[in-house]
Each structure stands twice: as C-alpha cells, then as structure tokens.
Image (cartoon, rainbow, N blue to C red):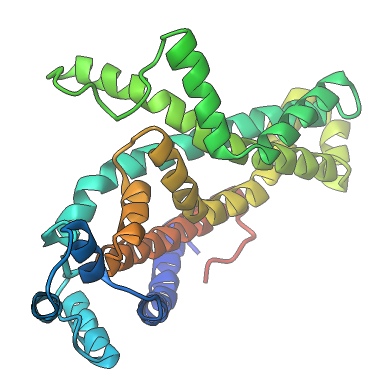
Amino acid sequence: MTAFARIRATLWRTAIQAIPTVFGIVILVFLLLQMVPGDAVDVLAGESGGISEEGLAMLRTSFGLDQPVLVQLLAYLNNLAHFSLGYSPRYNTPVMDLIMSRLPGTLILMLLSQLIAIAAGIVLGAIMAAWEGKWPDRLLSLVALLLYSTPAFWIGLMALVVFSVWLGWLPSGGNVTIGAGFQGWAYVKDFAAHAVLPVIALAGFFVAIYARLVRAAMLEISRLDFVRTAHAKGLTPFVVTVRHILRCALVPLITVAGMHFGTMLGGAAVVETVFSWPGLGRLALEAVMARDYAVLLGILLLSSLTVILANMLVDLLHAWLDPRIKTH
C-alpha cells in the first residue's frame, strides 16, 4: 500500500469512528449537565442582587431553559447540524465566537508543552537507558519521580515566586503586556516571555511520564535479536541507538502522547488560572462556576474533536515509524 493510500485509509477509518463517538459524547454530557442543580439564570440572578419570579421565568424562556430536557437536547443537536454551538447567557455572545477567541491561546500552550515534554522525555529517557543503573540514571529517575508527583499548580506557583518575584526575569501573568501595543517581532518576543512559565508548569508532569517510558522501551528493545545483529554488522553504538532502538521506542511514546493530549486540557485549566492565561481551560472553569452549560458543552465537544485528531495523527506516525503497523 502506498503512503497516500495509507493516509486516506486512516482518515476514512477515523471519520467513521469519530461520528458516533462525538454524537454519543454530546448526548451523554448534555444529559449529565441537566442533572446538576441550578442554571445560568440562577447565577445571573444572584450576581444582580435579586430578581422577581417573573423576571426569572422570562430569562429562562428567552434562553430556552424552561423547555423539557428532550426538547432542549433536540434544539442543541439542531444547532450543531447548522454548525452553531448556541448562545451563552453568561457572556451574552455566541458560544462559537467565545471559544474561537480563546482557542489560539490554549492550542499554543498545549502544543508547546507537548513538544517540549516529548523532546525532553526522549533526551532524558535515552540518557537513563544509556547509563542504566549508574548515577545519571538514578539522578534523572529521582527528578522524573519529583516531576510526576508534583502538581502543576505548585510548579507554576514556585516558578512565579522564583522567576517573576525574586529574579524579575519573566512576567507573572497574562499572555501579552496590556497596553504595550507591540507589533511584529516585539509582539512575538513579549508573547513568548509570557508563555515560558505556563508551558514549563504544564509540561513538567508529562516530561516525567515520557522519560520513564522511553527508558523502559529502549532497555527492552536493546535486548532483542535484531539489535544484536546490528551490532554484529559493525554499526556504531550511536547508529544502532538512534536508527534501531530509539526509533522503535518512539512507537509507544507517540501512543501515550496522543492519549495525553486531551488530558492536557484539564491541566491547562489549572495552569491558565494560576497565570491568568486567556484560554479554553480557564473559560471552562468559569463556565462551570457560572452554570453556563452551552459554553461548557462547546468546549467539551471541541476537546473531543481534538482528541480524535490527535489519535489520527498518532496512527499516521505509527505507520511512518513502523511500516508493519496496519492503518486499515
């Protein structure tokens, strides 16, 4: 099968699996949210200092919250069929516009964190495997254990104290300097400076997972017959490690990284709150507090699609790393 045929088969298979999956997620989450007491109107009434029963009824009617659950579900599915995510009572704006305004920040944060975690995990895992049982392996294993057991919000707070408060090297919050009006390269530098600490805080946990995974995979692969054959052919240890051992070890790493890409959104909610980063994670937390279920449903739907796309990319990378893996 040619490379193009593999890609087409993977896209087709993923699309077939994604449609019922997303449909089931939407229905299940919608019904679960309906079981939660209270709604956006109750929160708005509490923030306004009180409102009459007639006013509450009018608000619920205007947002369609007075309809039976099945009617609300059908209305939401009808909106999805017309590529609409509904309207947010809390922010008084279409959900799609609200999500699109926050999506770039979260995607940049997640992609940078994932890339850094994968790169650091590969390097640290390879070092630990090369010096198995020696002091570099023991030291890096201890570092990985500390990163794995330390919550992301604590890493973020300590990074704020050290690099923002004590040293003053990096900004403490936000994604750009408010009112600075930077343009071009100056804007990129300012954005990068604001992104350093959130990216590090979000990537720390995953660095530990990937490093331990690469170490275990490389040690297991290094004992297989084809590796001994490669050494017998006269290949240098570096070539054997990079072309044979490390390449095979990337298969489980890519699999786990694809699975954790969706998990990053949960970590992003905490990190974005600590650093006042305007993204979907923080928006999801605000939507929960405001009982704005339309926004929360839109974020969950987008997260599901992101996980599906990540899994599709993982399948393609598997086929590239190991041609023996079938994609159809």
